[in-house]
Image (cartoon, rainbow, N blue to C red; front, side):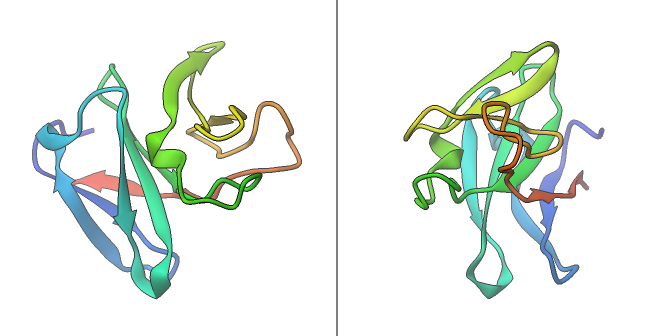
Amino acid sequence: MNRTGQVQVQSPDGTWVTVCAYEELEPACGVAALLPEGEQAAVFRTPGGEVYAVGNRDPFSHADVIADGITGSVDGAPTVASPMHKQTFDLRSGVCLDDPASALPVYPVQVV
Protein backbone atom coordinates (compact mmCIF):
# COMPACT_ATOMS: atom_id res chain seq x y z
CA MET A 1 0.00 0.00 0.00
CA ASN A 2 1.16 3.52 -0.80
CA ARG A 3 2.42 5.12 2.42
CA THR A 4 1.95 8.74 1.40
CA GLY A 5 -1.04 10.54 0.00
CA GLN A 6 -4.73 10.75 0.87
CA VAL A 7 -6.63 7.94 2.60
CA GLN A 8 -9.92 7.20 0.86
CA VAL A 9 -12.74 4.89 1.94
CA GLN A 10 -15.26 3.45 -0.51
CA SER A 11 -18.83 3.89 0.66
CA PRO A 12 -21.53 1.29 -0.01
CA ASP A 13 -22.74 3.33 -3.01
CA GLY A 14 -19.27 3.07 -4.61
CA THR A 15 -18.21 6.66 -3.92
CA TRP A 16 -14.64 7.17 -2.70
CA VAL A 17 -14.54 9.54 0.29
CA THR A 18 -11.28 11.27 1.23
CA VAL A 19 -10.72 10.93 4.97
CA CYS A 20 -7.33 12.53 5.64
CA ALA A 21 -3.66 12.41 4.69
CA TYR A 22 -2.01 9.06 5.43
CA GLU A 23 0.57 10.83 7.59
CA GLU A 24 -2.23 12.27 9.77
CA LEU A 25 -3.42 8.81 10.82
CA GLU A 26 -1.64 7.97 14.05
CA PRO A 27 -0.53 4.33 14.20
CA ALA A 28 -2.80 2.24 16.44
CA CYS A 29 -5.42 5.03 16.60
CA GLY A 30 -8.72 5.39 14.81
CA VAL A 31 -10.63 8.24 13.22
CA ALA A 32 -14.30 8.41 12.34
CA ALA A 33 -15.31 9.34 8.79
CA LEU A 34 -18.77 10.35 7.60
CA LEU A 35 -19.86 8.47 4.48
CA PRO A 36 -22.79 9.25 2.16
CA GLU A 37 -26.23 8.37 3.51
CA GLY A 38 -25.08 9.20 7.05
CA GLU A 39 -23.03 6.05 7.59
CA GLN A 40 -19.80 6.24 9.55
CA ALA A 41 -16.54 4.37 9.07
CA ALA A 42 -13.81 3.86 11.65
CA VAL A 43 -10.43 4.12 9.90
CA PHE A 44 -7.28 2.67 11.46
CA ARG A 45 -3.58 2.64 10.60
CA THR A 46 -1.71 -0.28 12.11
CA PRO A 47 1.82 0.06 13.52
CA GLY A 48 2.93 -1.85 10.39
CA GLY A 49 1.41 0.81 8.15
CA GLU A 50 -1.69 -0.97 6.82
CA VAL A 51 -4.97 0.96 6.71
CA TYR A 52 -8.38 -0.59 7.44
CA ALA A 53 -11.92 0.77 7.56
CA VAL A 54 -14.86 -0.84 9.35
CA GLY A 55 -18.24 0.41 10.48
CA ASN A 56 -18.09 2.82 13.40
CA ARG A 57 -21.34 1.57 15.01
CA ASP A 58 -20.82 -0.98 17.78
CA PRO A 59 -23.36 -3.75 17.09
CA PHE A 60 -23.70 -4.48 20.81
CA SER A 61 -24.18 -0.97 22.27
CA HIS A 62 -25.49 0.63 19.04
CA ALA A 63 -23.20 3.62 19.68
CA ASP A 64 -20.83 5.11 17.09
CA VAL A 65 -17.65 4.42 19.06
CA ILE A 66 -15.47 1.86 17.24
CA ALA A 67 -13.01 4.58 16.10
CA ASP A 68 -12.27 5.15 19.80
CA GLY A 69 -11.51 1.46 20.36
CA ILE A 70 -8.30 -0.16 21.49
CA THR A 71 -6.27 -1.65 18.65
CA GLY A 72 -4.12 -4.73 18.87
CA SER A 73 -3.76 -8.13 17.28
CA VAL A 74 -4.90 -11.69 17.89
CA ASP A 75 -2.95 -14.52 16.25
CA GLY A 76 -1.43 -11.97 13.86
CA ALA A 77 -4.79 -10.46 12.84
CA PRO A 78 -5.18 -6.69 13.37
CA THR A 79 -8.05 -6.01 15.77
CA VAL A 80 -10.01 -3.31 17.51
CA ALA A 81 -11.85 -3.73 20.82
CA SER A 82 -15.00 -1.71 21.35
CA PRO A 83 -14.58 0.90 24.09
CA MET A 84 -18.09 0.08 25.35
CA HIS A 85 -18.17 -3.64 26.18
CA LYS A 86 -14.71 -4.67 24.91
CA GLN A 87 -15.82 -7.09 22.15
CA THR A 88 -12.90 -7.55 19.76
CA PHE A 89 -13.27 -7.30 15.98
CA ASP A 90 -10.93 -8.44 13.19
CA LEU A 91 -10.15 -5.32 11.12
CA ARG A 92 -9.73 -7.39 7.94
CA SER A 93 -13.12 -9.12 8.02
CA GLY A 94 -15.13 -7.16 10.60
CA VAL A 95 -16.03 -10.41 12.41
CA CYS A 96 -16.39 -10.25 16.19
CA LEU A 97 -13.91 -12.66 17.75
CA ASP A 98 -16.07 -12.93 20.88
CA ASP A 99 -19.32 -13.58 18.96
CA PRO A 100 -18.70 -14.66 15.32
CA ALA A 101 -22.41 -14.18 14.54
CA SER A 102 -21.81 -10.40 14.81
CA ALA A 103 -19.65 -8.31 12.51
CA LEU A 104 -18.86 -4.77 11.50
CA PRO A 105 -19.18 -3.77 7.85
CA VAL A 106 -15.80 -3.58 6.10
CA TYR A 107 -15.04 -0.81 3.62
CA PRO A 108 -12.37 -0.85 0.89
CA VAL A 109 -9.52 1.60 1.52
CA GLN A 110 -6.97 3.12 -0.80
CA VAL A 111 -4.14 5.63 -0.42
CA VAL A 112 -3.83 7.87 -3.48
